[in-house]
Image (tube, rainbow, N blue to C red; front, side, top):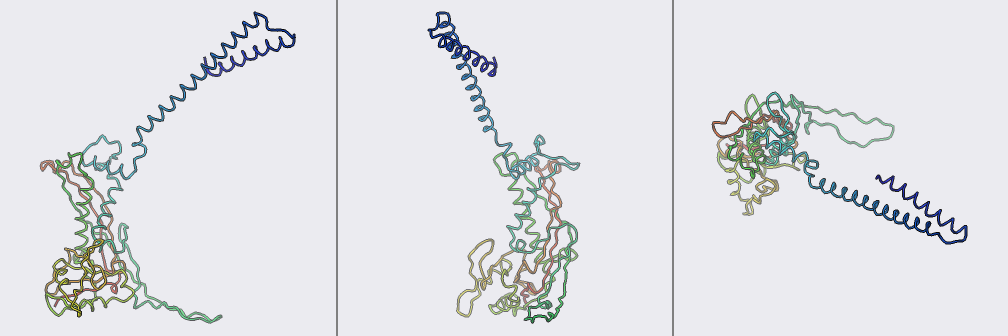
Length: 379
C-alpha cells in the first residue's frame, strides 16, 4: 500500500472514531459494547498504520545515506584537476596505453595535452634566469617589437602657463623584428623506466627536454648563430680588457658604468664558470674580494651589488672573447619561444628498448635596446 493511501485510510478511521464518541456524548450515554469494540479495532488499525508509515520513512532515509556513501567512495573521476588529468594522460601516451578515454587521437597520433606542453617552456624559464628575465613575445610568425632609445627620446615634462600651448616634442620609434626559427629536441626514455609504475615519468621527460632547450637558448642568446638566432652577438657597447686572459676590478666597474642609470635596476652579470672562478680571485682596493658567492634564486652570488648568472654557454676567458656580460635582460633582450608540437615515437626506437619524445619549437632572440647591454672583450 502506498504512503498516500495509508494516510487517507488513517484519516478515515480517525473520523469514524470521532463520530462514535460524538454520538455517545450527544445522547449522554456510554459507548455500547458494539461501539466500544469498533473503537478499539479502529484504534488498533491506526496504530498499525502509524507503525507502517514510520517504517517506510526510515527505509527511505537509509537509502539516502547509502547513496551518499557510494558517491563519496568515487570522487576521483569527478573532482580530478585538469592539470593532473593531463599529466596522467601524457604518461599513458608514452606508455602506449591506448585504452585511456582521455587520449585524443589525430591523423599523426595522439594529441599531447597543452598543459603538459606548456610545462616544458615554464621549466626552461626556471633553469635559465637570462631567458626568464628577458621580454617574451610568444606569438607565431614574425613579430615587430617597437622600442625607443633613451638618447633619442625627446618627450619631456616642462612648466606651463595657462592659455599658452605646450611645446611639441618628437621621438623616434624603432623596431626589432623577431623571426621564427625551427628547432627540435629529442628525448629517449628506456622501456625499463616506462614500465616502472612508481617512476614519475612525466616529470623526468619535462626536466630532460626543458634542460636541453635551456642550453640551446642560452647558447643562441649569448653567442648566436649566423643566419639564424643572433642573440646578443649584435650588441655594440663594450669595454676592452687590458689582458687576454685576466680581468681587473677597474674593468668590471667601467663595464657596469656603461649602462645608464635607467637600466641598472634589474641588471645582472653573465659569464662562463672559468671566468666566474677568475672573478672570484679579483680584489677590491680595500683588499676584499669583489664577489659575494652566496647562491640564491638561480644566481651564483653578487658582483658589485648585482646578481651573477654562470652559464656553460658563455664564451671562455680567452683572446678576443666576450668574457663578461652586464645586461638588463627585460630591457635589452627580446625572445620568442613558441611550442610547435610534441610527438611520442613508440615504434622508431623499439630496437633500442626505448621510446622517443620529440619537441619542436619556434624561437628567436635579438637585442631590442643596445643601451641596456654591454660586454667585456678580452685583448
